[in-house]
Length: 209
Image (cartoon, rainbow, N blue to C red; front, side):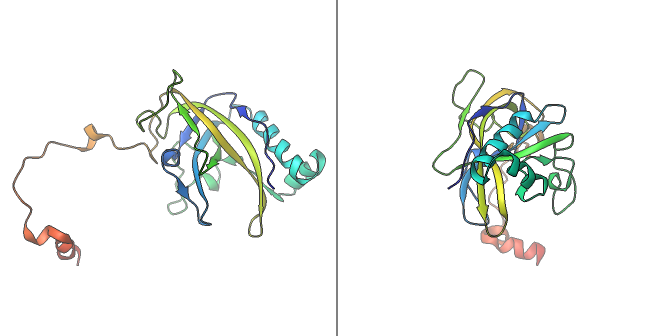
């Protein structure tokens, strides 16, 4: 059975990224469903509270603080705090850094399908629109850490997310931020029905086939 730490609030503002998973349940490659996103932590902010929570859960599961510290040092426990300037902060296909990741640590946070995180605005009101919580917004998270273990990856830790409160706007990063309608759209005159060759998918074959 997995162990978990006590809940804690992020001590400083964190930036949300890949927020689609806070609005729609995501399914991973093992078939597990969860609510999730990524939180970016500026590197000039301390990690002590995150380390403490991770150590608390790991020690409860795998045999005490000293033993766990050695397992972490030997990289026998997967570290849940990742480097935004490292390879895990880059797009696997292009090799380019994910927007907003340089200069930050990042953690992938999740909650089980039956436990959607509470999402609230500055006034503690429920967030009902993705315009309020988009990739790039800053806020505070209420988190915990839990352990996991499987044959493929061994031992690891993950940060669970219980709540996110939006605190201030930030530059949109993409990955769930929506589309700027004014930037991309224009008023289009009604020119009648489309040609028959473009209906029902036939046009695509003509253009690209």
